[in-house]
Image (cartoon, rainbow, N blue to C red; front, side, top):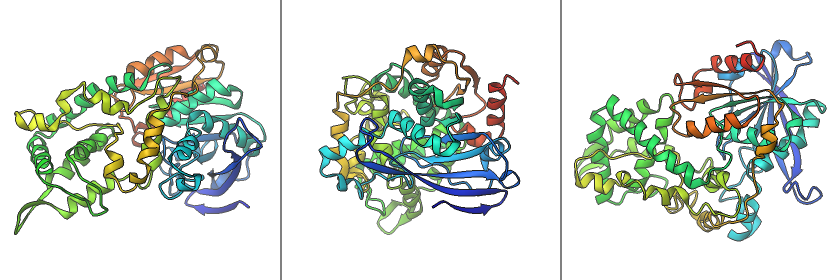
Length: 433
């Protein structure tokens, strides 16, 4: 039973669907998907084309907007919008330390999670599309990992697409995870350098915090083991439009005086905890490297291994000299499954996923080269999360794809530049720009 309700300027309907866990076994076990339908209040009775939104991640449910926030306002002028919680996220049969034991032990959990990549997400979309659109193709808007899914969609089921719109999410068609991270660490270093140029006072602040963490055992209020590597991982913020400023504000009041000497303040620890914990999106940590898995070569904790090739990220060495402590970015490491209470029970499961050698291809280069679906993509020139060279190589490999390359926005341009970013891309898709 669908339930509809109103928010300012929009009518929302909760929709639930049943799909196979394994689309290769359609008569086997099923899972439930959740999506929120949105339509402008003044267009509720009209026949409108559909736009499917695929969230970034992996591991995040779709945006929970209030009213017509951000890019949704622009989309509702032309479309009914379906905000899909991809399988394992949000309200779509969530995968977490609480639910995964229902599958059995780590081996069974790892086997289960192999079905939570872009290829399965695309087949979910195709399974529900007839129920939503009556069988008509829809426009797909893919942000970040949602863009990766969109390229898989173009590879696996282009007949389901009227138009494909991608923001910050053109993946390499061939790169192994090692290639992705070898390209990523220099980009991250450039972002950190730019942050310190903007806020030079943060160099000493970061060194002081790192030194404290190297010489003290610190547990955050939720039991998270706050190591220097965890502190460095807060650099994830630097890939967003406001991230550098938010990081600066976090660092400026990290310490307080106590009877026992300087300590990291409760306020700082509380903020760090909210940024570091994977409790709300554990699937991100579990399957993040598997989104680059194709073929027989394991991902094998790629980000951790490749980091060793960049010794400038070693905080202890930086403190022994006079160089700044470098933050890291969008990388997942084995130590996270020891530090984070939300991940600790899943360490063996994560190890088994990292060791897999039977990943199926996610993209079809031949089909993409013959593409007939209108495709437009925003490529953020200074994107910390998705390599620009990889993105542009893929753009050239997809027939007819039109790019908008800009340094006006960071990776979150769809949010920060809304509705202008979406308006431009839709105009490009219609050959109006």
